[in-house]
Image (cartoon, rainbow over all chains, first blue to last red; front, side):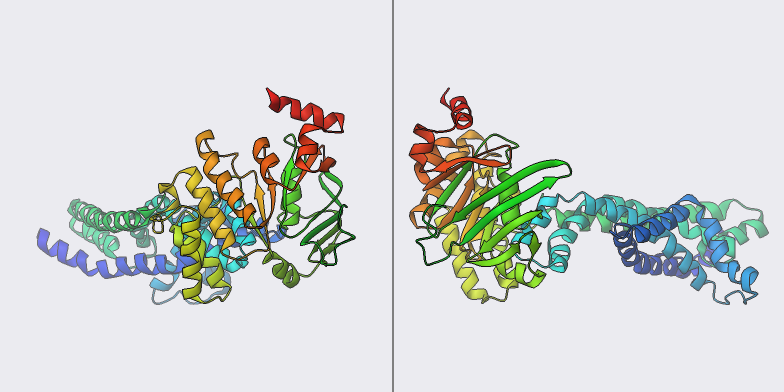
Length: 215
Length: 256
């Protein structure tokens, strides 16, 4: 198999790689905020339960979580394994990344001085106005570098979908590598991820720059 | 309380028998005071005496444990029980608070810091804008409308904070050590602005360590120590002829 055929075949899986990437961000970024707010809840039971789930999701391998979400329903209830693996894959990724984003959000929210809340309160901002207008914009600026880190990691983590044989780029590469007994597909995959992340870095850098209008 | 009984108009702020503890530490013990319209009251005293806590209780940032807080004769807290949230929100429009470390919103321009709250309260945008510009002029900040807080000196930031509080047209303005976070050469410009407000008969309560300022600007000085009001009265009397030993002791430190 020529290098070009390899690249073309693997490119076919890029759409699925992108699907995992964008859908995971779409769900995990907002879900992370909900988890963060639950984690900071004044109701002790709520924050304790949330904290437990976060430690489980961060403390066990993503690969294991992928297998659990994809095949768990079969072993537990005898349910059919989803025909479109994108669904369990995105669910597993979204939950896992939400746990990481939640901790980033929480760190960001807790870093805002209490005086900002007090100033808003005295000025008559409602709780929601205070959060949306005063706190959140400052949190976003502060957490951008950490979020960029996670997004870069996500690009590479999409390769883990091969464990449930979802036909994304890396899974295809691995199959070619096996059938052709060649290391070449892995190098191609590496270049793909590198380029993908170069774009991510560039875009995130631009967002960070845009937020640099104040200190 | 001097003068209160003669007054038919209720004081803008009345505090009676206010109590506040942090855990087992009692920081306010049986505090009573009233603030009449047009008056400037300075609260002085050593750190830890409860001055700031008193202001924070009056502005509902701290929850007091007992006593009464009245705005314009209406109970915000009666015998340790607070009015409803909605009522407290209405009382909140009566006062403004200027913090020691400004607490401007760093992601907003000077203008937006001043205009956002009144606009959120449903006031006319144009009118708020005009008001903000006139406050900016008054605070000597012309040309800084579109600057961000980090681009301003501490003194300028504090003047923006004063403008922000005034934009809501409060009936009384509280200052919690407004110059304590400033370099000495910048305190003057902030005190000058407060003095100007005093001349315009703005009602103010100022917690301060600036003794000459307190003496020159206020109608009444309150000396607090260990959570109680030790002595209060005309600034000349309190400063030049204090009655209480604790006051004398405190003021002696500033003579040097």
